[in-house]
Image (cartoon, rainbow, N blue to C red):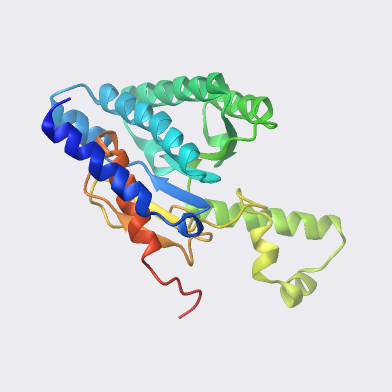
Length: 253
């Protein structure tokens, strides 16, 4: 190994040793951004950027497993992305399908689809549902796969679910409005029953959430990284965790 490689490894180990177990986030949300830009800078087809991003996802989940992180939510395809060109969307959906297959073969993650599956091609939606059943008993990292996801749509879907349930129970709109609480809506979100994310990471230098976990991230900490997602290193991840551990979290104003 070259001298720079040796120094990199030493610094990486030093960073990991500095992490306090009690200050490692239990749930991390990740906006995996920068795949197309990575391909453009490399002079490669867009599909290669999406594939490099998919490979990084599998590597990243390994890091999370090693560090004992329990829940990861990956923003892989938004409802807005569904408006991309037909050729790119077909390639991207193919890469996502292949990634799901690889997640199932690994047998070390529990997969939960997060999104409006009815907006996806039938075969991909079926694959997500099948993978959820297939991995239901796995005790590894719980991975929320956000595909066909939109934060505003999730909240609308949650309210619709709440109202339908109320109608089944014979409640009037006035009764629902009179007793409605934050927890009432939370139980109808795509991530119902899960802890909210402690930390949300976005790569590629963009400093916005793009509708990602709008309800759940109300009190999350945010970390924006300049690296494009395929270039995101374990060292970058450890720096994000160190930064998170140094913050004083405030659950309010």
